[in-house]
Amino acid sequence: MLWEKKFGRRANHVQRQAEEEAESKARRERREAEREKKVKPVEGPLHPSWEVAGRAKEKQAAVAAAVVVKPAGEKITFD
Image 1 (cartoon, rainbow, N blue to C red):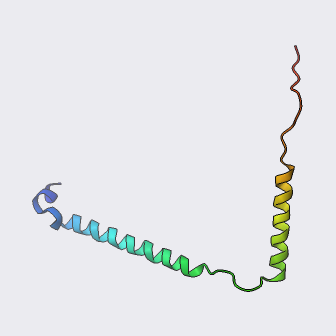
Image 2: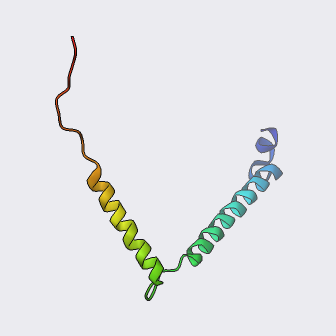
Image 3: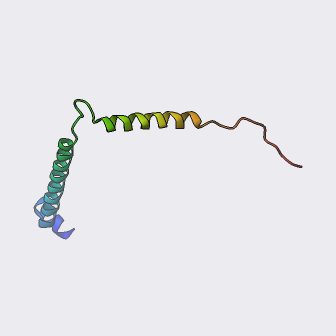
């Protein structure tokens, strides 16, 4: 704190901290840009096995959603 009071923004530790923050921000932006490059939209027909797997997954999800039913009945209590 003494060096910050004496030198303000020109204090070495303050300058280093600002540089490190700028570097980490640049690294983060580069990583995000690389991720965006890697994600490619699917164009054209899918492989037949992928299509079948996708249909099976959709069917299974529909069946699972239909199976979830709350029990309808009266609660029995014993005295």
